Length: 130
Image (cartoon, rainbow, N blue to C red; front, side, top):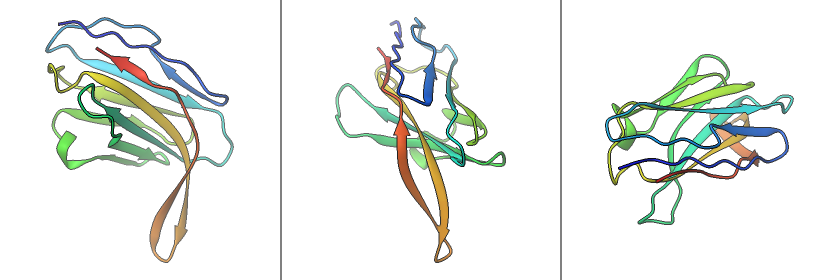
């Protein structure tokens, strides 16, 4: 088993590494950087090779909020901040569960009626993990 990561960037949002090969049980760290003023949240998505839907892995808002969704807890971690640079950590690669594409998106988070509305503005193209 090997993993290959590929990244294409959108204006203002950069996702790295651009190319990476990894084995089962390896750790992987993906980076998402953006330079969009007032954007405070970076979200991470996964699309597996078997399912075309995007699944939210987790997100980082401001410099203090890091959330990993339930199905990914214990296997993924997020760090950094939503203001400029965030990281997705795959703690131990599994096959085939972790195969597929990984996307990051820069968002602006606004408070309305005591809930967060996440408005997508820019996102990067996929990082491909084979």
